[in-house]
Length: 427
Image (cartoon, rainbow, N blue to C red; front, top):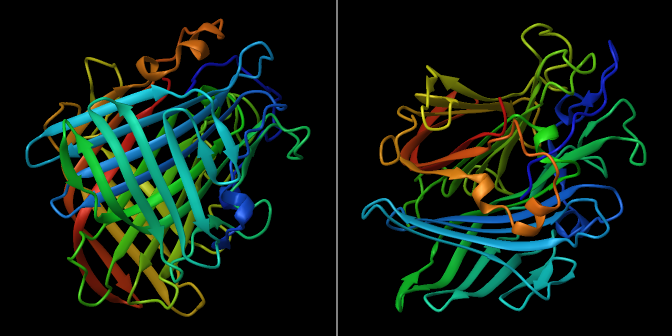
């Protein structure tokens, strides 16, 4: 993944950022094209990712991430990378591998390289599965399957071709915009298969999710901050009333280059979330939320939402991390509230708080502080002229947690696990 850029559009008093959460609303049905690899190589810098997460029975966390990057320079080829991580909170042991793939061949949702293969079956209207096989080195091999049930459809924020897409630049049209960002989710999936590490087999049966994201511009121009949350009930430990539950949230904050009145008009946050339950809804979708958080200097610059939904990630009591110089939250609170899917008369809300966060690995569930620069492929670093002013870090946390879900005024505490990230791209 690459994180460098030059400053872009600057025009006084003219919006050059258009948050999807101010113009669309609610559940957007996915098409097959939404989760197919785009591999766009004729529109400048592109970063495309597909990520699978799962929590196993003992609380072990697993991530498989694919990253396709193109720097927009003809002489520098696109790169394909796989990053794999597993962390056991009981032993505090983690395993990490990252490889730059060769011989990549993309075909819709499928991908075959010399080092790994992804095989996709199904469609958005049926059950879907991704079979991941990989030999990352002589000590780590993967044989995993992530399956989305037919009665738990994926989503994007808002219906239609523009669903989920926030745009950058004064002109929102595809051919004239500076860039865009979009996320498409499968919040509810199950994992199965085997992970082998040093000849020891790990049963990968777990509760997972999938997200496909495209950043159609240089990531450090797109966002200064990111927040991500993934809550799930543990395998075999469904809630008696709500069944298997998911709560997901993705938020980014713009840089100073983009805002409601052009550059230097304040940073805007875009937050998209969802709550899923296998027992409280026929199609598992309880609610899809979205909220625009306008700059503090112009709190009414954008409509907060079309339907009045709430979707927020709040950092509490920030403390300076001496290692990175970022102000890291001591705790984080996530909130969701919106109409129940298919009913405008029923409100669904949820809340979860990570009571202890911080910047010390091993405390507050902090798994790792990921130095993003250290994981960028060499060919991407070589093709970028300016690297000053950018020092991205991702703080990754994993904790047992309780999600409070309220449906039409009736609250249910749901026990499970919360994996969350607080990412800092630039000051």
